[in-house]
Amino acid sequence: MGKKENIVQNTEQKKQESTVESVVNETEVEAPVPMTKVQKFIAIFDKFGDLFVLNIVFFVTCLPIITIGSAFTALYTVTNKMVKNTEGPVIQEYIKAFKANLKSGIAIWLVDIVYLVLMFLQYEYVLTHRDQLEKILFIAVGFEFILFSLAFPLQFPLVARYENTTLNMVRNALVLAFAHPGVWFKMYFIWMFPVALYYLKPAWIMYTWYLWIMILVALFAYACSMFLEKFYVKIEEPRKQRA
Image (cartoon, rainbow, N blue to C red; front, side, top):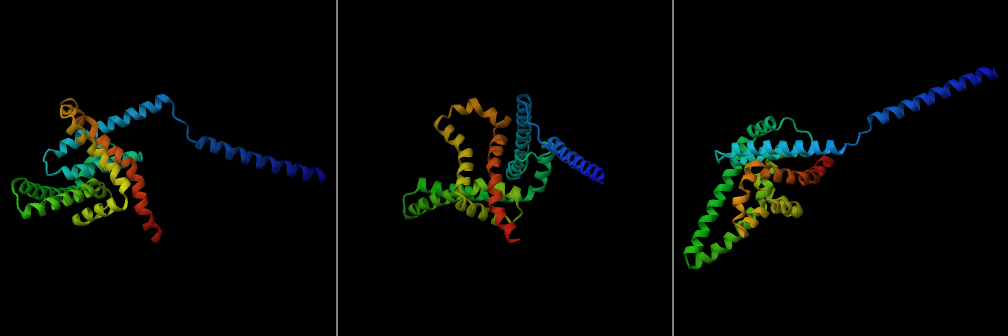
């Protein structure tokens, strides 16, 4: 009996050892293999290639002017996926997002245009008149500009991510800008830094205009999407917990 017990124990021990070895082997197989420097370079080069293609398609769809809002919405839709490495062919992804957000993108862009036109007309009155109304409009234009600066950077990312009415999108963009000033400032800085730079150095436009057509718009949108992903988690997590 002693020998049989030893044989059984040895057999069970071997089974346990083989099971442990198989688990270890499976773990080793499933563990991600670190990328080499060449692979990292190829991945970065491939990403820039996608951004180049995306930038060209973006400008083509902006040509009707009225579709600029839809183009920005589609751009953010694709760059959001690129940040998570879940995008497919960028042209197909962009066209799909452009068609899906065509009406909503046009609607919010028209609201922005009307708002800017009204603000410009008030500013023209301020420059050409010297009366009591001019003083009131001067304060009003400054306040309106602040509201526009707060709401505009987050409008199209919200349209790209959520479904809502046009006015609610504008209102939510404004509320989120107040609630998350750090996110708003990063986006505002990314897009307004070149504007300020060109204002100080107008000649630089002649040397860099082609970069905007080639890659800069898509690159800036991609940079915004990198920290917008964390922003989305912050505003969506409370909803998931309540659900």
